[in-house]
Image 1 (tube, one colour):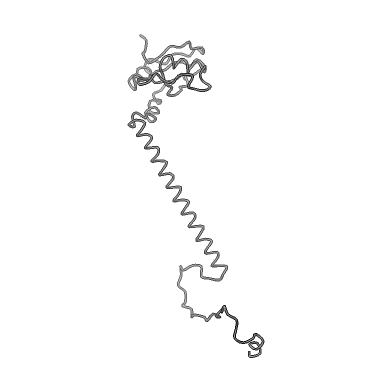
Image 2: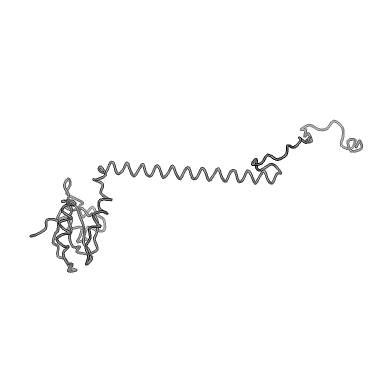
Length: 187
């Protein structure tokens, strides 16, 4: 009995067919998924049947318009999902990976785009916050270094003894009333 989700290709690398139990699990997981042997590499291609469009035309894929796998998928109205490296032991781990990447299960492309954009906005907010907090830290370090060099108090962590206010010399913008020589002699 032929499996509807396994398409026979010319199979130039003589890959053994996937086991029947795997194809049955694939059909249970998603009836639109199809697997076929690549015509270009010794791997399997997992693709989805197109339901709402004719698929991607080979001439719209630059560099791959003459690729045999692209032409095969176009002829069978398929869109590539992923590649599967053939192994002696087939497992169902691929279904968990497909489930994690399934945009339809997340609510469609619009919802996935919104989730991605929200994640990017949150990341941008975190980066901005980190940048601002780093700027504040640099600012406070620079100010503390400035205060240390100018003899000012750097930390208010300890109160210490209360100091009396020292009189500072007054600085005037205008010229002194007496000439400097007379001021010097008066001292």
